[in-house]
Image (tube, rainbow, N blue to C red; front, side):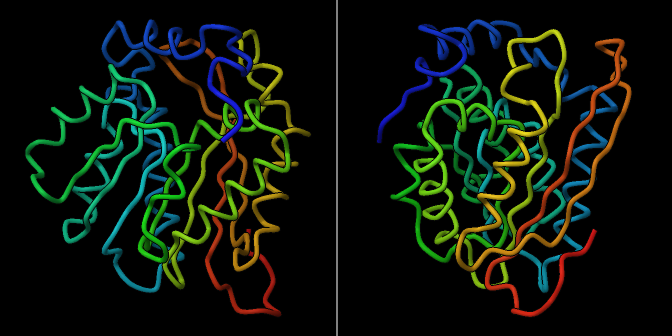
Length: 235
């Protein structure tokens, strides 16, 4: 598919920059930050609120080093898990972290744009796609973005749920231009326009992250597959 990580906002060395960031283990404090733990807990809570039954198969886009992956496997002990991570270093760490879960956990080292079509259709009761949609949107045109989510939507099981968390208006960072509210609003609208998907939750949160000494604002989105027609969104 058109677009590579190096063609996005990172310039010519996007994947190299990501590998550099992961030169230090857990560079964003995913495993120790109360801010991150709270955000994970909210996503798991929302998944439970909108699923009709416990998930059998979970997909996570952007597994990083496997911190959230382990939380999902622990919270849903009967589920099998597949994670997709583009960068080699965190992928290897996630592989190691998930060894105790045996055959329940699989990590794929791949670009979602290259592998989304190969994922099994109608399999995943629960998909998490957090803190990376703005990178994806920066790499490909709007038509490609919509097509990618059309394809991803086909991988969701009937009555399955897509849960997303995204920072909004990040300041003083390379992500500043790609996390602006109008841009993120456009992504949310496009995903909600995919046939068979309905947005069933939207909320905004501002929370202090002690490790960075600052507040961050993020949004939580939930979309449901084959949502019954004629019903309104919930907040």
